[in-house]
Length: 312
Ligand SMILES: C[S@@+](CC[C@H](N)C(=O)[O-])C[C@H]1O[C@@H](n2cnc3c(N)ncnc32)[C@H](O)[C@@H]1O
Image 1: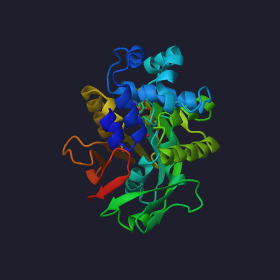
Image 2: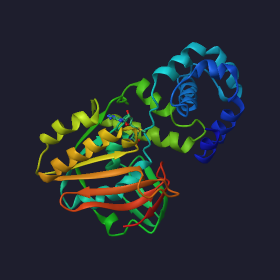
Image 3: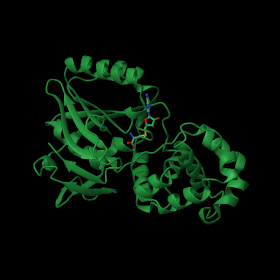
Image 4: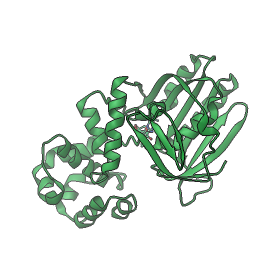
């Protein structure tokens, strides 16, 4: 995991993961947690949570002692708290897909696996792609990244109107509570201050109009939700870094649900997930699907949407 932290841009976590890998206190805290790669993310998330809540000060320089002193609390956090990364920068990857399906219709959003729901407010942020911009320049959060070959300027001239916003998550995070907001902040790597700043601004925006998050497995909940959708609007079902957690049979069922509902019309699907077909340096793909119309690839991306290679 130290290499992953290094590649992901956290020198702090890379150095700590390396120096603590063989520490008995770490073994005592994470036990035989599976999958193994999750253990450092949960442990560092727990320490960051303690720091953000003021329960410990400056923990990173004296981490071994902090682990010893907070053994029980951290062991419980590692065992019980799934990783909750709500990466708002992914909206920078998703936006062109929303614009490409909009076609002047009202959009009713359904996000699968929204975590705290921060990416349900993508239309309230402002964006930069090279020289081009989208959104209200007075928005409280600006997202930008390194875009190659697009998105096309005409597409960024598209206006959208969002109707409803609903997410379905089996562990939804309530960002209106201190605990929920702190949890999303805690899973940002502690030295990534830009990411932390973005998540804080997005939480403020979400708190002005809290999202409707349904608690459940989206493969089970989605059919009933789609059955009652308003066919006068375009319902956009979307997911980012979420179907990776499904078993193959669940993935197949999701495809079936969308294909069946797609036949009734007024449905689009946006997928920002691991690229299983043609794995590349970027690792992730942005696809849109409409009925009729079929599935189309728009871009390749990295997992946090810092870089986009436009291919449409
Ligand atoms: C890595 S997070 C990504 C959150 C958000 N989509 C983003 O891009 O920031 C994955 C989320 O999917 C949720 N999730 C995974 N499988 C699910 C399922 N079958 N039903 C409901 N939620 C699920 C998890 O609880 C978690 O909140």
